[in-house]
Image (cartoon, rainbow, N blue to C red; front, top):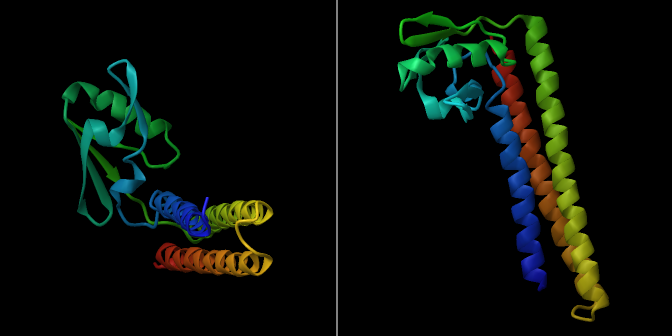
Length: 186
């Protein structure tokens, strides 16, 4: 593996770690209706486990309301059951073929809990970034041992990996700050 390939793979791994965290953040309630809150809920339908977004159209007609329209009316009860069993803590209201999910106002205590959850997710992302750094540095040391690069080149490459790490950790911090502001906004 060449030094450029190592840097590229390390950067890609760090980027994936941050992207995963951002995806996880989308499922955290901020008091506003968002389809990301429910789209990945598993629903037992047609004898298999499927994601809600595969079974229904999810829309936000109002800032505090999610509207779920099943493609097939026969799965309405299955979707309702999955929503009740999920961890989102919102009771669905079935209206014929439609399912309404009113998003309640978040209490101050609940907002603080959500901020803690977001910070925990961010720390997991930082750990993934640091793990990618460790992997990259290990690869650099391997190619130094094989004689492909000198000790000075190894040191320079390690500095590049550290710069990547710092950049992605700052990006994680930036996302956390934005999400916290979203959650705490009344």
